[in-house]
Length: 115
Image (cartoon, rainbow, N blue to C red):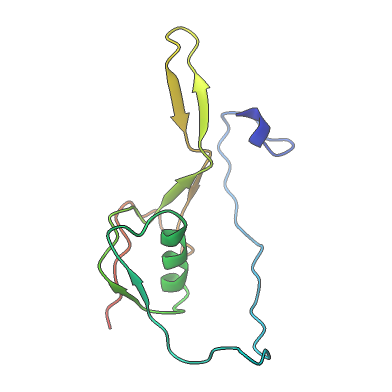
Protein backbone atom coordinates (compact mmCIF):
# COMPACT_ATOMS: atom_id res chain seq x y z
CA UNK A 1 0.00 0.00 0.00
CA UNK A 2 2.78 2.46 0.83
CA UNK A 3 4.57 1.91 -2.48
CA UNK A 4 1.86 3.88 -4.34
CA UNK A 5 2.23 7.08 -2.33
CA UNK A 6 3.60 10.21 -3.93
CA UNK A 7 6.28 12.11 -2.00
CA UNK A 8 4.71 13.97 0.92
CA UNK A 9 1.46 11.98 0.94
CA UNK A 10 0.29 10.66 4.30
CA UNK A 11 -1.61 7.37 4.45
CA UNK A 12 -5.25 7.97 5.35
CA UNK A 13 -5.37 11.62 4.33
CA UNK A 14 -7.87 12.60 1.65
CA UNK A 15 -6.54 14.67 -1.21
CA UNK A 16 -8.19 16.10 -4.26
CA UNK A 17 -6.58 17.07 -7.50
CA UNK A 18 -7.05 17.51 -11.17
CA UNK A 19 -5.50 15.82 -14.18
CA UNK A 20 -3.67 18.58 -16.00
CA UNK A 21 -1.95 16.38 -18.56
CA UNK A 22 -4.21 17.04 -21.56
CA UNK A 23 -2.79 16.28 -24.99
CA UNK A 24 -4.28 18.27 -27.84
CA UNK A 25 -4.69 16.38 -31.13
CA UNK A 26 -2.77 17.68 -34.11
CA UNK A 27 -5.36 18.92 -36.64
CA UNK A 28 -2.81 19.30 -39.46
CA UNK A 29 -2.20 15.55 -39.81
CA UNK A 30 -3.03 14.11 -43.23
CA UNK A 31 -5.31 11.45 -41.71
CA UNK A 32 -7.07 13.76 -39.20
CA UNK A 33 -10.77 12.76 -39.13
CA UNK A 34 -13.23 15.66 -39.34
CA UNK A 35 -16.52 13.76 -39.75
CA UNK A 36 -19.25 13.06 -37.25
CA UNK A 37 -18.89 10.14 -34.86
CA UNK A 38 -21.05 8.47 -32.21
CA UNK A 39 -19.79 6.02 -29.58
CA UNK A 40 -21.80 2.97 -28.57
CA UNK A 41 -22.00 2.10 -24.86
CA UNK A 42 -23.94 -0.57 -23.05
CA UNK A 43 -24.52 -2.56 -19.89
CA UNK A 44 -21.03 -4.11 -20.06
CA UNK A 45 -19.16 -0.84 -20.65
CA UNK A 46 -16.90 -0.57 -17.60
CA UNK A 47 -13.83 0.96 -16.00
CA UNK A 48 -11.67 3.01 -18.38
CA UNK A 49 -14.38 2.80 -21.05
CA UNK A 50 -16.73 4.61 -18.65
CA UNK A 51 -14.10 7.29 -18.01
CA UNK A 52 -13.76 7.64 -21.81
CA UNK A 53 -17.56 7.89 -22.25
CA UNK A 54 -17.75 10.54 -19.49
CA UNK A 55 -15.10 12.59 -21.26
CA UNK A 56 -16.83 12.35 -24.64
CA UNK A 57 -20.14 13.41 -23.11
CA UNK A 58 -18.93 16.17 -20.78
CA UNK A 59 -16.83 17.87 -23.46
CA UNK A 60 -19.52 17.35 -26.16
CA UNK A 61 -17.05 15.45 -28.33
CA UNK A 62 -19.47 12.75 -29.48
CA UNK A 63 -22.95 11.51 -28.60
CA UNK A 64 -23.26 8.24 -26.71
CA UNK A 65 -25.67 5.71 -28.24
CA UNK A 66 -26.83 2.22 -27.29
CA UNK A 67 -27.92 1.68 -23.70
CA UNK A 68 -26.97 3.16 -20.33
CA UNK A 69 -24.07 1.53 -18.52
CA UNK A 70 -24.69 -0.55 -15.42
CA UNK A 71 -21.31 0.49 -14.03
CA UNK A 72 -21.30 3.79 -12.15
CA UNK A 73 -20.29 6.97 -13.89
CA UNK A 74 -17.93 7.76 -11.00
CA UNK A 75 -15.14 5.17 -11.02
CA UNK A 76 -12.57 4.10 -8.44
CA UNK A 77 -9.13 2.70 -9.06
CA UNK A 78 -5.70 1.79 -7.82
CA UNK A 79 -6.92 -0.82 -5.37
CA UNK A 80 -4.76 -1.62 -2.37
CA UNK A 81 -4.80 -4.63 -0.06
CA UNK A 82 -4.27 -4.68 3.69
CA UNK A 83 -4.43 -7.60 6.10
CA UNK A 84 -6.22 -6.63 9.31
CA UNK A 85 -4.00 -7.39 12.29
CA UNK A 86 -6.40 -9.11 14.68
CA UNK A 87 -8.62 -11.05 12.28
CA UNK A 88 -6.17 -11.53 9.40
CA UNK A 89 -9.04 -10.66 7.06
CA UNK A 90 -7.92 -8.96 3.88
CA UNK A 91 -9.31 -5.50 3.20
CA UNK A 92 -9.47 -4.14 -0.34
CA UNK A 93 -9.84 -0.39 -0.82
CA UNK A 94 -9.49 1.95 -3.82
CA UNK A 95 -6.80 4.61 -3.71
CA UNK A 96 -8.73 7.19 -5.72
CA UNK A 97 -12.12 8.23 -7.04
CA UNK A 98 -12.47 9.51 -10.60
CA UNK A 99 -15.31 12.01 -10.87
CA UNK A 100 -16.64 13.12 -14.23
CA UNK A 101 -14.77 15.96 -15.99
CA UNK A 102 -17.76 18.20 -15.19
CA UNK A 103 -17.01 17.57 -11.48
CA UNK A 104 -20.17 15.59 -10.80
CA UNK A 105 -19.95 12.69 -8.36
CA UNK A 106 -22.48 10.51 -10.18
CA UNK A 107 -23.29 7.11 -8.67
CA UNK A 108 -25.58 6.03 -11.49
CA UNK A 109 -24.59 4.66 -14.86
CA UNK A 110 -23.58 6.75 -17.85
CA UNK A 111 -26.71 7.76 -19.75
CA UNK A 112 -26.92 7.66 -23.52
CA UNK A 113 -27.20 11.04 -25.19
CA UNK A 114 -30.46 12.59 -26.31
CA UNK A 115 -30.20 12.92 -30.08
